[in-house]
Image: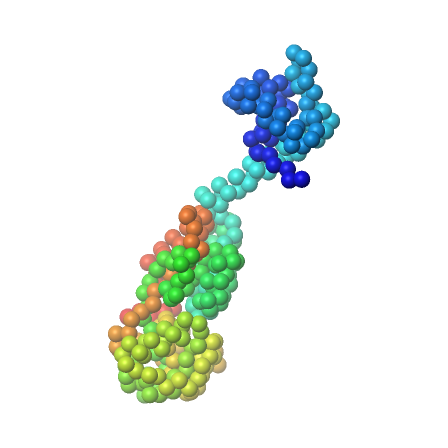
Length: 309
């Protein structure tokens, strides 16, 4: 049989058990005596036991079974109060655990740095880091496995809130000895016929290909990889050029070969880097603090180890 009772009924039960009369419980809770009496009767009917012995002109005393229920009711009310305190703490004070996801392509540049600076500002915060492609990050948000995703404004689901932080134009990545490597910028019209090493990640690949389509070009794709480190190595060893969402100052491939990373001369649009969360009415204090922190870091310092134009 399903047992249905309210916290208010338990509150009335505990008050009567503590003071011994309905009249005194009424004064303590500022509730009418009939309301308390009705609640006690309802609980006895629901539980199928007598909770109190009624003494004429001497109040009420708990039965042995009633005392056990009384003690459990006290515990339930205390746990509910503690839960309310935790929720209040989460809502108002930036501390505790926060799970942050970041795109695999930008995680090495941003996630550890922002974790370090955020935990320095909020010593009671504990940041857990995860990486994945755009689709994987949105799936983690939907399953509440992460609180925040550092990502781009591409194909944002309706149930995800995205706040842009900085607009980024794509860059070209070349072998250090490529004939165009000493230029200040590279024209896609000049390089489109050469072998392209495509960073083949969900949504990112469509963005890179649309960069060519905007100016009526079709690239010559000869290699595909979903690993940015592999793309950097392939380019550094002369297998082609590649496109990046972020122009980085880091010009070494994993195998130590040199790279040249240059802006694109044509107007090819941009993507916006920002933070995404599950669509909720009010952010928790720690999530709101993380948004404010990243926004302030980008405003003051830009993105770590990146080129700007």
